Length: 359
Image (cartoon, rainbow, N blue to C red; front, side, top):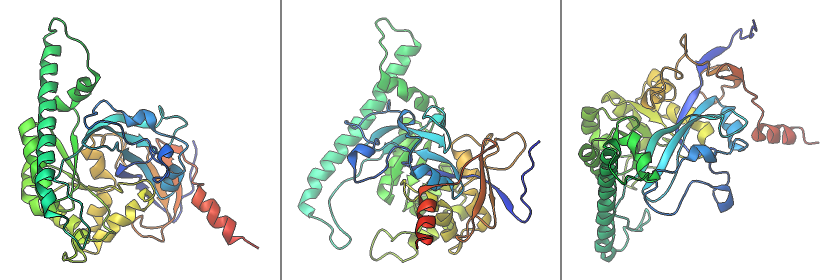
């Protein structure tokens, strides 16, 4: 038996980032290091799990701050592919994912008009933008209908039936085995996404949802969880309260909506605990903030029987800290993934020590 000395320290579950691009992109400005996009707008067959780079420098940096599991997302113009839940440990891309098809990723169409924080764009462009939006919705609905016809033909062993990888990838979604993770920011697209999910009878998880607080009653009535983006950010509009993104997590939690946090990036996944902590000062309880990066995401992604809390029978995804993980001064002293100790060395620590000891 191996005994770990943790006198005076604290043990917490490893944290879970519910929306990242870790393993799929290294340097955003260098196209050759990013493997998140594909041609076309309807690509449910894409499986980012097979493209994860286990040697990414983002992984040990993120891991060193107690993040043991992430949901890595495909990008794209609309139906982007299958989001993968991966452990941040493993020699190969086959070793890291433990739910390679945890959700289907949909970037919900919007009426896209270029504008800045100080300009609302060209009003004359609206009719064309609305026409494009309506066509995208039609394409999406027709694709779902085609997928359902494929499902029925497959079940009936119809003569001449041939396998289609795109429609095969849709089957777990149509059968309710995985949720549709819809990225929508504003109130109107969120409401459109709710109507779409009702029409298609699919299970929905809302991602980003900066204006989800405006439709809290509808989300609660449908039992739809929300993956919130960074709280440490500016509000959407210049006339919004400065703390709009800080208060939203607390409002949603008090409305009875299950929330989790996602960095929606690679480089800032390590700051996940502080995104949750920022909301604590603006109405979210400390316990709910901690659950929003541990237990709740595990429940949302259907893996609470394995990770998300410290219980007998679960995997030992644990961090040993010298304080509260939501506090910035806290240091992670030891980390375990599935009971195996994980090296906390990383590029940022090496650079820190290098220049700290500079002659």
